Image (cartoon, rainbow, N blue to C red; front, side):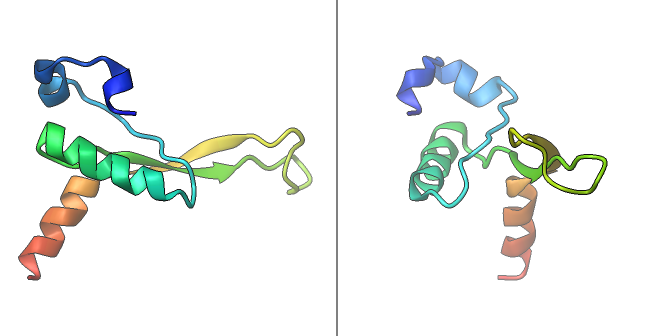
Amino acid sequence: MADACGLSQEEWQTLPLLINPPALNFSAVALLAELHGRMGYFPPVLRLKPVLGPDGQRVVPPRFAVAEILNLQAIRDEARARR
């Protein structure tokens, strides 16, 4: 998957990438490990939430909005301080 992006070595290390992994998918964590190896840090990832209609129910077809951007590198760095 990472090779399919077609980024150069310089782009892997300099572009501000934002990753939106699929939910409950083991290939997502493998991709994160690959990206960390290429980039030297963990990229930020999105956490999505369902969009609700005016009645408070989920809309059809399902839609999602960004709930937050998780800074995985900061989470990792904080964890290292507790090591």
